[in-house]
Length: 523
Image (cartoon, rainbow, N blue to C red; front, side, top):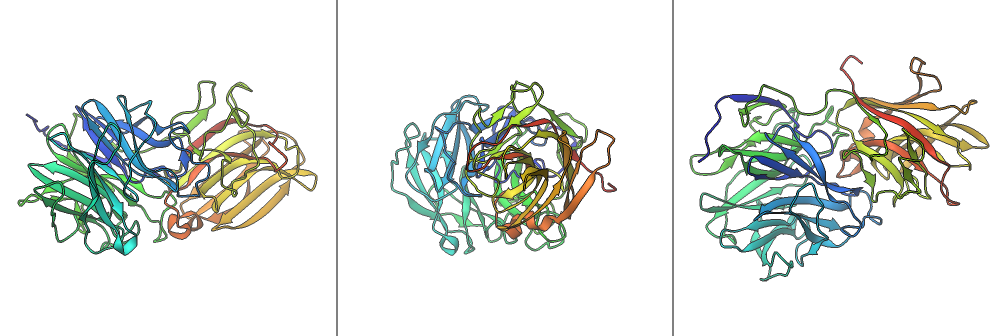
């Protein structure tokens, strides 16, 4: 029997800041595990563990091999959508969609840190498949079908060992007449089946709706209003809320993990969709409620304590400096579409350095370009590195970038142009780009930096040491890197890139370190 822990805890949202959309989670004993979407980034689907739903530690990725998913031909914001994580009889299951790839599939593991199996494909549904293990041993897939206004949820039974459909898909849920009824989750709570979905699209009208019935196939009685939305709270700091996961804690209380956006000046957010946490309140007639335009889901929240702990804040508060070693990159690091091979990336060629060699693809070209990155997690932040790079051919580049998509990014790096080596700033916005080139006389390591105050990204360089003065190469509007403007489903990722030419790989680019630093309001 669960025993409630007395006392309250204060925490700060989001519990996973930055581009971590579509959270799905399970509790296994006293541990909580969570996954989120990754789209074209690889490795795919990060796995997190927590003891309290607030502090999350990444322990691995689900998709780490091209035998599981090959994203080389995916465009920006294609690839891996809305994973669902489930656990049954000692096995973890992650089910998802490879959009414009192999479609719906699931993989399994006995250790959520991995390794995970190769895909088991399933036959029906468009996106956002979810698994439900019933008490009688039957296993159901719920998935989105249709398009836009015709979107609805289908459901069918499968053989969990093979993915074979054991029944024909049937329509079980059509939502609240809003577009994009998606992200279904089926639960059995106190003897009733609850079908919960998102509705309204991922923008301002996003909301979470729910129905219940006595059978896994319904019919589901609809609650006449959302269990979560902020679409009527225009001045609230958290917007676009939805795509909820319900789960109980070790004391028998219920919580909701969900995505939301923190707009800056009403212009969207470069951070994309982030993961938030709120307690669930059960109504007297048995409905789970989170926040139907009441402002309950807030940046600073108080909830029942799950563990004995003092008040704390989630997220990053201190500088994070990556010093490169032969042991490999940390779990926070990602790539576009594929992990670069040894010819493109090495941590052993020069001790203490990350060595990149660009291939024929640049940041604007899509495909498997060379970009080693991590998520931006604060609106006010800076990144910095020291780069040694002597381009051998015209057009070879290496530097750092703030990337939302193939068509929207800002970069500053070293290149060769008209026989001169210099600093190149590139500003790409919705596929339209400008470049500015500054020749440099000395072939010495160059320090590069990108700084953001939430409104603009400033790009800088210096040829001097730690105390040298930075040279600003201009400031560019943050708004151009928001999903609201670009149409992307991701958020800005920050990192190091290298690009060769059609003739072959670039000269080696050596990075001594990479620092990510949150900035105070007065900086």
